[in-house]
Length: 247
Length: 321
Image (cartoon, rainbow over all chains, first blue to last red; front, side):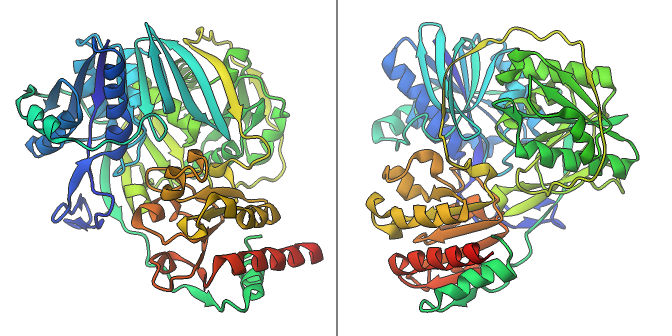
């Protein structure tokens, strides 16, 4: 089986979010970059688990970004994966990125394309669906479990108020979330091995983005919390009922 | 030129999030001086002409039972065809489970720019700009859609529904629906519980509750409020509660009217999943818990004493109401 895992860099979950150039650009100064958690913990680790079950599996990683993405893709290789591809262009809107990945994917004969359910920066939840459409493959989003037997995948996904399990013939695109796999930490052997794994850099194809970011806003500062004394709990109920009117 | 709202169902009933999409789509149509129509996929029991109350002129249906299951590929093809046939140039989805499966596919298929997680009406003073939540709710981006057909997927629980009088015209679209490649073999619904992402009130517990055996006080409070229950990541990881209850940056992101956090310190990753809640109440024995900075109301004290008293006080108000 051949698996393609889409990897994105994302600011660390504790990063301070601020903007520069009249709020048109994310302020990257001082920001630690990590592998987008959904891509790492779920999509990538799932691919590694599948390879552990069937050693005849090849895992390719792909990222769209300039050379500053290399530490991220090396870290992903340290976790697992046989080789990586970096499309050498600054990221753009979801469609632009999906079109770049699909160009690689359509020539790669992949059986399974895995993405995280969203990135923690733009939260668009779009790459998987766009990729599936561009590749004309079935798509299961928000997966909580992925198993593969022969050429059939058994995938559970989040639905309204529960979970649904479906069988789908490969090839398939799946967006992964919690439940799909357990988070792992790269070991020294993996880190050493990652240094010599192939990391191919390819140039982007011409794609016109469909959207563009005008600028960013930060939410207004929250007013101070209204504290109620611990011996006056009924007052909290009254405030919620009469002032906030939430029940 | 018209606005087409994609209506989503669960067990043959229109979802609450679709009513939000209807109200939103009608507002967009008013703003642009055009009509808002709805597209219902699959077979639903609801009286569709009543969608007119929301300001819808026409309800288009594709009443094929294949569409009662969401196969993103089949859905996207049907919606794209319906878009062409109805001449719609703006599509509205809810950014719920179905929207996340389907809307981006439709975007790629129609080369139509999309904004997901939208939290405002479009600003059309200079182009077509929609505000969306980014950085897990820590900021907003104003995104310009630069294509003739535009797709907006709105955050659930971010827009109120409103309706008046009116009857919509219901007509079937004659669209061939492809056979699905996804075969559903099992559905597990958590019965009797309010789905977390659609809940108006959510009561959530953290490590401060010390163990799964202590969840009774939280469940009692949730029951009295008709609330869904949630938990912090450590609680989900420790399997004190099922993992689908985990709210936070890497769990479920919610925006209820009321979020009550019990024994949760309020790490930035947790806040990212709940900061779109309209009112936040924090109960924690640590006055330095960061959650108090994000809260509207709070009590510093022992949850085991406070929560049962709160349940009782709410019960009194509910009984007298």
